[in-house]
Each structure stands twice: as C-alpha cells, then as structure tokens.
Amino acid sequence: MKKVPFTVLFLFCVWSLFAQTEVRQTVDSLLQQLPSREGTEKLRLYDEIYQVMAYSVEAEAELRFLQEFLRESQKQGALNYELTMRAAILNFYFNHKRTEEFMKAFPDHARFLDQNGQSELMLDMWAAKMRLYHYASRYDEAMEEAEAMRKQMAKRNDPYLSGFVTAVLGTLYYYQDYDEEAIPLMIEGLEQMEQKLPYDLITLFDTYRCLLEALEHRDRYDESLIYNARYERLIAKEEKEMEEDYGDGANNIRVILNQFYCYVHYANAYLSKDELDKAETYIAWCEPHLPRLPWQMTMVLYESQCILYDKRGEYDRALALHTHIMELIEEHEMGTAAIRPAWYRKQGMYLAKARRYDEAIRYYDTAYVQVEALRQETFEKRLAATHAHYKVDRLEIEKQRNRHYFLFALGGCVLLLAILLLIVRYQRRLQAKNRSLVRQIESQDALKKEMRRLQADTAPATSLFVQLEDYLQTTGAFTHPELDRQQLITALGTNQTYLYNAVREATGMSLLEYINSLRLEMAKELFKSNPEATILQIAGRCGFANIRTFRRQFKDFYGMVPSEYRSGLQISKIQPLSP
View 1: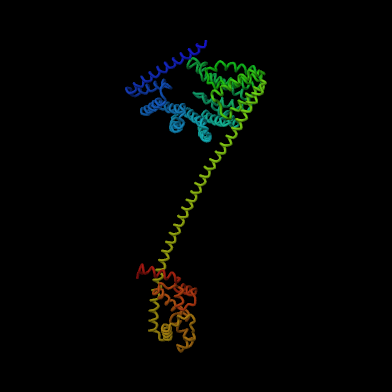
View 2: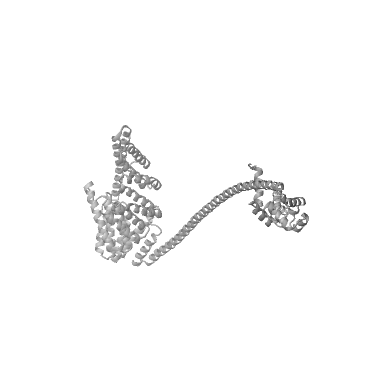
C-alpha cells in the first residue's frame, strides 16, 4: 500500500515533465517562424507564442520575448497588442519579484495605459505596485502615493476607479494593523466598486478578505457575517462565469481558494457566537479541499478546528491538532517573531486543559522568553531608528544652516557690492562737482583781481584801500590770528571810519571779511603748493585760530570744505581743467 502514492506521484512528475517539454518544443518551433513573417501575420504569431509560453521558458528569455513583442506592436501601430504587452511586462516583473525593475518601468507603462482608455488595467498594475510596497514594508511611500491617487481618481466621477483606490488604501491601513482606520475605507471602496463590477475581481476578493479579518480582530462578528454573505455571492457569480467560459467553475482553483476563505470566516464567526454545529458544517466543507491548497491554508483551518474542539471540551483532540500545528510551524519555520509566542501560549493553554501542567509551563516559559526577546529587539530597533532619524535630521539641519549661511553671505556680498557701486558713483559725482567748483573759484579769483585793478585805476578815493592791501601783503599781518585793528589804523594814518568805508567801497565787504578773504586766498595757494601739508597746518599758517573756523569760512566763501577743494585740485592734475 505504501508504494501506491509514490507510484502516482512518480507518474504525475513524468507526465508534467513530458507536457512541459512538449510546450517548450512548440514555443521553439513557433519562434523559428518569426523571422519569415511580416505585418499582421507576425503579430498573430507573437500572440500565439505569448498564449502558450508562460513558465515554459527561462525568465530572461520570456522577458526578451515580451519586449520584442512590444517593440513590434509599436512599430506596426497595433495599439491593443501594445497595451497587452505593457501590462504583461509589469506582471512579469511582479511575478518574479523584480521590484526595482517594476518601479522603474511602472510610470511610463501606467501612463500609456491610462491615456489609452485602460484606466482599470492601469489601476490593477498600480495595485500590484502597492503590494510590492507592502512586501517591502515601505508603507510611508505607499500611503503617500495612495492618497495622491485617491484625489486624482475622485476627479474622474467614476465610482469604480475611486472605490478601487479607496479599497487599496484601506488594505494598506489593515496591513499596518490600523483596523479602525482600515474598516470604513474598505467598506466605502467595496460599495463604490460593486456599482460597476470589473472584468477581474482580484482586488474585490482581496478587499473582502482583509475586511473580514479586520472585523474579526475587533470582534465585530455580526458585521462580518453580513459582508461574508456578500463575499459568498460574489464568489458564486465568478463560479458561474467560469462555468460558462471554461465548463468547470466548481474546480477552478481561484474559486476554491475564495470559498475556503469565505467558509473559514463563517466558521470563526459562528464559533464566536457558540453556534458550534454551523461552524462544524463550514469546517467540514473545507477539509476535502486542503490537498489542493497551499499548506498555509491548512494552518488557518486547523486553528478553527482547535477552537471548535476546545469549546466542546474535547481538549485532547484540540491538543493533538495544535501539536500538529506546532510541528508544521517548526518544519516550515513559519511565522514572525511577533506571532510565534501566541502559538506557544495556545499550546500551553491546551496542555493545561489536558492536565499536562509541566509541559504547559515549559511552553509558557518559552513564550515569555520570546516576548522578552521581541521587546528587547523592538526596543533596539526603535533606538537604532531614532538614532538614524537623529542623524538624518542633524544632517538636514546642517545642510539648511549651511544653505542659510551661504545665502546670507551671498546677500551680504551683493549688498556690499551695491554699496560700493553707490559709493563709487557718489564719489564720481562729487569729483565732478568739485572740479566744477574749482573752475568757478579760479574764475572768481581772476575776476576779483581784475576788478581791484580797475578800481585802483579809476577810483582815487580807494587809495586808502590800496595802502591797506600793500601793508597787509608786505607785512603778512593778516596771517596773525590776533591781528590788532588799531595797529592797522595807526600804520595807515587814518581813523576807523575812513578805513572801514574804504574797504567796503572797494570790496563790498567788512574789514574782517576782507582779511578772511586774504587768508582764504593764501590757503588756496598753500593747497596748490604744499599738497603734503595738513588742513590744520594750512589753517594755522593762514591766520585762523582753529580748524573749525577755517572750515566754516572756507565753506561760506567758496561753497565747499577744504578737503573737497584739495580733492578737486588732485583730480585736476590728473584730468586738466577745460577752459
């Protein structure tokens, strides 16, 4: 009897190998015909090969074929084939877990599908992208992209498209254990999607499964039964379509898998309500299908059976079945560190109910050690993540600070340059003004000298002024700060009234103003002949008691301060004054 299963298995393997070899030979034969075909016939041959080649050739050869088919479709302008190949290439990357290539190719292919009336197919590919994010635990990127897609689809006024994205967003919350946020989103998505059923129900089925599990996690079994009934009707609809299309809907593996999920959820809901006979009915339906399903599904059903035995007080049967579950866990190294302690606690619970206390304590201790190790690992991961975030934030802050420093320095340089330009412009204008004033002063001096000469020739009454002028120029008395006016009157042999009238008649100035004008003229000459002398030295040599008086008198008489006059003289030497 032991040889029969082995013989059947051996014959099945031989048949599978023979069938696969036959398919590969067919594909090779068709590929050899491609170079001799042209136009539409070539595209039809490509399509014929595509229909039979899946998993019959190596992955790289399949990808090269899909890319060649795409290029030929683009070359001939065959839009339908091009749309199919773009989706096929993305499916290839997804099925072979080539995440980076999928992410790189997705934007271009998805945009083309969407722009050519295949929005539903585009969203199917986008859902595959979200699954890849889920497999890699890249939830931040997935959530951000899902929110953006939801806003984009909401603008199209298509309930299916909007519901599709909302449902996927809900499943993303579910995968992160945010059941309260996930449940309303998945319900909203299902309500919208079922207004217009798509050609492919995969996303609907996935959403129902996630919704039912989330409701069970929150012990909302009455709602779970309502949505499970809708799930069951949807499965029946697909089974009927499979029967019409392929003649055998009941044995379709996707139908069986969804029915299995549906009935297990029914069983769990009725177990929670202590309706054990109903739960056993659904469990009984699932058992015959276990050989056709992945072994992970066995674990799901065994868990429900253990609960059934436990509620009926059949602790030995529950313990035996859960012991088998533990063997499967160890054999397949199943479960994450976060899940395994719960199984060990359950094993300890069933052992305790079966009065095997020593073994129960051992499993409880194992669960405790695993929980503590998990807490320590979680703490270390969070600490490492916090440290990494701190480093990233610090680097970002340093970058921002350096950027601010650079912008501040750049702004300072620009401001300094603007100030320098303004200073240069102001200096140039000031220099031009000084040159003009120097010319005016020179002209005024020449004019005054000529007027004095004419007045001396034509007005004898001014002889007293001439005598005063000769005396001051000869003796240099005007250069003395403490000039005595009485001394001038005595030296000239006149009185104060005659002297003051003579000066005013000849110059239009008072005696003091005239003496200051002589001092200022001397200062001008000293500025020309002694460019190295300081203003203070020149003021003293000209008879001014202090530099403040000298500067005020010079400004009043010539319209500029001494420093500006000197600057104008220096510029005039470089740029000679025009006549």
